[in-house]
Length: 394
Image (cartoon, rainbow, N blue to C red; front, side, top):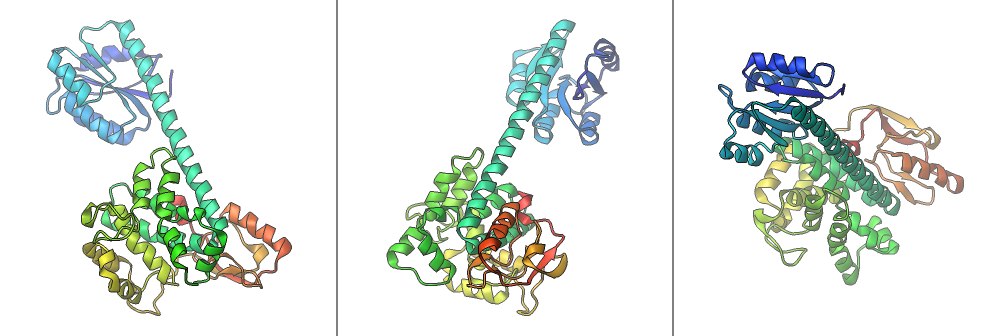
């Protein structure tokens, strides 16, 4: 018997009893006498792998019910079992209910059992593929972030700040797929890996770039798009990253493209939040920071700018709100994974290894330990301990 549930939905109690007897010991069977009670089963029970529904039921027919199931539990494999076997019903069941098999009453017991076995196998394939994609996605993003952290700790620190703000904005704006915005924020600077190290170093020190260097910098989103497109399920993220420097009035990069509200919402959000991270030194932006951005109105969606300002801006310049957690002063060798830096981590020769506002990952901690062998750090450093890094919410 499988540990995955099969749910039968029919208003005929006698049929449900017969199915339980017929399939006892072969499958883990659940039953419901109608669509409404069956939907409650989905709230109460995990791992409903297969759902078999009758077409003709009062209040909610089988097609309506299976459409609900497709929305609330898309991985559940759907089968229709009905005495109404006309062609229109079958077509609607396939197109709207996205069913796996269609059975007419009366049915052959052996055929039904085989269909249930096939459906369980299909569910296993679907969920295994989904898990594989999620793990591949998470792993790919982590690799790119580790590369960015190694290449430019300063840029990485700003990116983590941008990610945290985007998470908050996504929640308050009810962004339709918040994980895409979060990943886009994390990967927004990834195109910079194409830039020469000396240019990145000057950027980190706040030194001005030459015209040719500024042109290279302007085109890094295109490099980022090409990198991200190689990762499954990140097509939308790649487009957000590509359009992050596109101004609301249609100027900016890329030179040809959408303008106004035709620019992806995620790109319009990142355009604002990333610019805030670049000009501000605190963990939350002040109203003064927004006033600086407001000098370049052509860059930003005005309605979105006003909303984000109301969400994030601190009016009192001395009212910085630190993240929750226990504030500590520690030596470098006392740092742990997931510690949140309140000060820059830098050597006595002014080399920044990791900027304030960053969580320390396993890779970064190993890098710090390696640096300790050849360099002397300024210490102690201020941290907060006991937080859950924003990067892990992806």
